[in-house]
Amino acid sequence: MMNYLRFKHFNLFCCIFPSAVGIQKASLERSEEDMEIDSTRTNSIEEEDFSASTLIEKANRNLGKRLDEPLVMFGDIAVNTGFMNADPCTAHTCKWPKSSNGNVYVPYVISNQYSPRERSVIEGGLQTFAASTCVRFFPRTNQRDFVDIQSLSGCYSYVGRQKNGQVVSLNRNGCVHLSVVQHELLHALGFNHEHSRIDRDSHVQILTQNILPGMESNFDKVDTINLGTPYDYNSVMQYSRFAFSKNNQPTILPIPDNNAVIGQATQMSPMDILRINRLYKCCK
Image 1: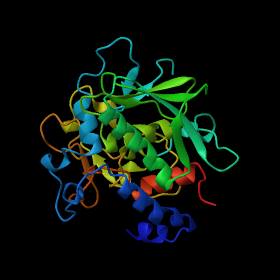
Image 2: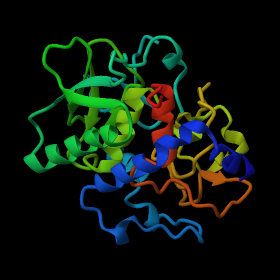
Image 3: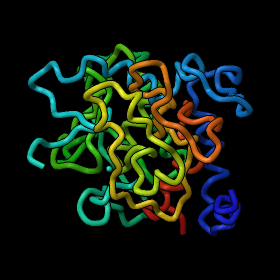
């Protein structure tokens, strides 16, 4: 808690307050009642039904059945079979380039598989980044590298900028939600899950005895670049308490306060926004 209080005085915290307002306006008609979180009690499975992590987990139950799709690990991260807060690759190869005007332009294509309403949700999610960061998603014309949004067998994305068209899968049955769009595009910008942070063992305990067999790799740690920011239970990149549970018992336990609410984000948190601004040096 003391670390967080100290952190509030960072100069770059100027990015947070106007950013949070922009995100709130882009919540795509979610009511205040839907967004309300009771932070005084431990979150239950029912309370997490609409969080990003729970929506993604439900949508990804059938992943791996199509041979024409990439290998997906860590729950929803696509990886090249030849072979991650910010992934180590963002230090050298996989950040999107910054233009001379200070903005980061990321071209995208949206498949015609989506209905007008679904397309509107996806485009609305893309525009929330412009409301609070220097990242600008824009329709592709002839750019070589771009984000290719398709309805494949689940919700997943590569981490960081790849070569040519990189697939972000937002399946029509379960993935077309504001929080999921933001979650997957944060992967594409170079960010990993919060519970994969290199320092996560100081903030959460992974209860391996409750994890579904074969799903243990979803909880692996990554040598992340944490950008001088504290662990954030409210991050849209934080898995829920019961993620991949085999017995309805917690797989992720916050410490030292086991009753802290985690993994209920329905949109990017102020800390998610600050990390984008720090990684891409958005604030002057």
